[in-house]
Length: 403
Image (cartoon, rainbow, N blue to C red; front, side, top):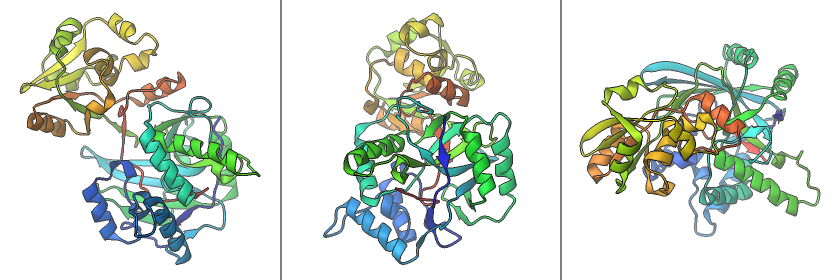
């Protein structure tokens, strides 16, 4: 089961860190990176996506800056081990929501087995990049995001109570999300939370590449450290843990834009019933999800003609996997197309606009339910890339874990 512990976090010494936090590295555009760097010379993007200088490559430069910030007091390390409770207040399509959880050090386990369950495939290139950075700075600069069952709502209640107290740090990001952080070093709270999680499986919501990178770093340390022990800090990774029962969990779909395959109309006629555009939103919560295609200026909602097709197309997958619109897209509508041929887009409007501009097609999919993520992960299956988009993203720079 999940093994967590309190840790001596590294964080900014100032209370308002609006100018210091940044989004996760993999969603920062070149233009946004420039803006973040201008906002503060201590913005975490300077480490996450460091630029080389005349004598150091980008990873060595990140290490140089990290040490410099610690030495000049811009960053401080807490003297007592703590858990770091975290709240994000945000608007989801106009509705105000609050998501609460906490940061801890999570003991690393093999990504392909154990209590930490993954649900998405990873790519070698991002893992190599993150491993080089981790080796240079010897710290988890940004967390992985995990979900766990809290059926008695013990952690949900604890988070709400802590949220009534004054936070140690606050920030507001460009999306308008308001971030709060509490440093909790109360030994009883730490013991209670640690004990509660000891009986839980955890499910990676976001940060699959970072988790596997941390695991690869641990394997590297096995070879290098003569006094190796997985109980040392490199045996753990910075993790944000959020109860599945939290009312602020919001999962957005990721839509696709692609050149129309030659056989797409044949596949539609053979495998799908065609419904009007309006049916797509009405059927979002159907047991078997629909997909919607925008092609040649027209929208069509597609539903699988025969549920038996799902098992035939995905014989080694669980029912939760087969029923997802994103799975139906990649296994029945447009099978055998490499992931890198798609452009991935968050909003329906943006996907359709891009399809029009590039004379491609847009395929819109419903969001993946959190229950499906759990079932797929428990079956040790991985979903197609970009199957989930948890909103809002966790901020980088809220807390750092030294390894």
